[in-house]
Length: 282
Image (cartoon, rainbow, N blue to C red; front, top):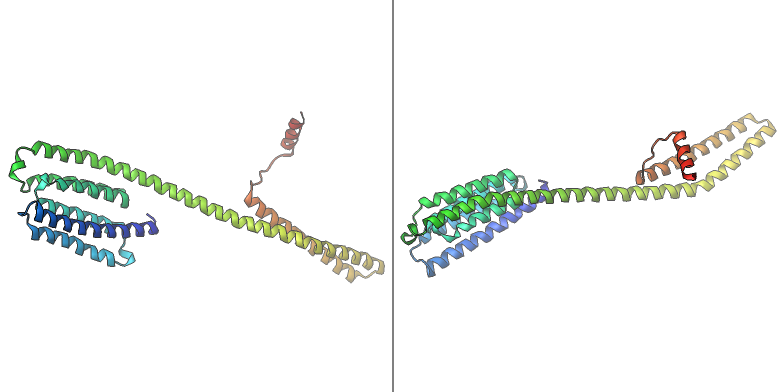
């Protein structure tokens, strides 16, 4: 996972844990006041407070500790705290056992596949362990089959959901990488296009003065020959050679830039070229 996306996922996990902790405290308080006053309110609120306190180090953690391992451990802690809350409030008969699925989905969105499977297995094991927790006597015999069916449905659905989400996220990550590579290639092409334009403009602007210098150098060569001035002739020849060299450099620069922007040249035999021309003539 690239560092930018990892930082975004870490920040999102911290914010979700704040929201979940506050929501759990509100639900526990409301259920204890209006639904079941016999709930052990103090231990349950203590577990919720422990989860909120455990989120504080993540919120204040420096950059080097904001890793996928830290996020995975935090997700496992959340699973353990949820198991404790459910064990204190009806065990497997508590309808909020469905929150185990939320932990699996959140892990599949934010974490690599090994952590997703670890959290999926831990959630299934934790839900199964809730059958040994104290349950309301009215439901112990009548709904055992239904509760076992719910647990089996979770054990079957959670791995499938985790696999689907992790594969979808991998496909999205590949699409993002391909898009980033295409964008980088487009930027390189734009830079090369600017270089090609600059080279073509330089060649066009410098061609006239170079041609003038070449003409003057030729005149100097002829004048030197008429006068028999070997030194002047040598200087004129040197000037003409340097002008030709500058022209070659400008043409090469322009050709290289244009070649990077378009199709690369492919060596071709003269015979093949002649055959292609003759085929086109019919």
